[in-house]
Image (cartoon, rainbow, N blue to C red):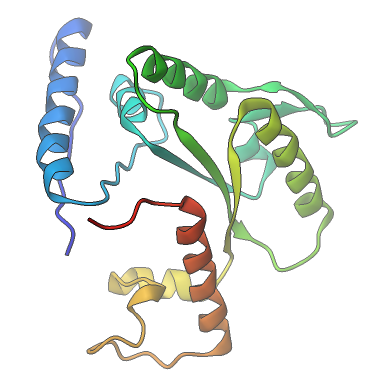
Length: 202
């Protein structure tokens, strides 16, 4: 089982103290994790906070899941509704760019930013094609890679209730009959892991 550490926001009365306490708390969680594990995963909230921005500066790989919707895409880039062409990067893309600059200024290696499309429909809808085109244009503009992502599948929701993933199926003690849909879903997860290009275990 992976080890887990929660890093909470500071309740200090002034901003400078808050930021110092949050930085210390994050580093206190990261130091033993980096010493004892091959992979460290930091799950950041959707809000734009100092703690979230700080976590971004530590990332070697940044994975951004994106529901297949122009509502979610608006956080990455503004799209002209008439021409469907990219107008400019949006708030989150600009925030990532800022954190990349801070990391580069401190001598860190470049961040490998990956955007994955999530909850993809199996239908060949116009929205799906427009999203693909907009993301490809944005990827060239702001510098991220696109991963195939995960389709909308019931099995993902069912396994969540048991605390399992598709990689746990057919392991001892897991009572689950595999269907072709399950096999296809498990391959999606494997493809996503491969797309991350994570370093080999030590």
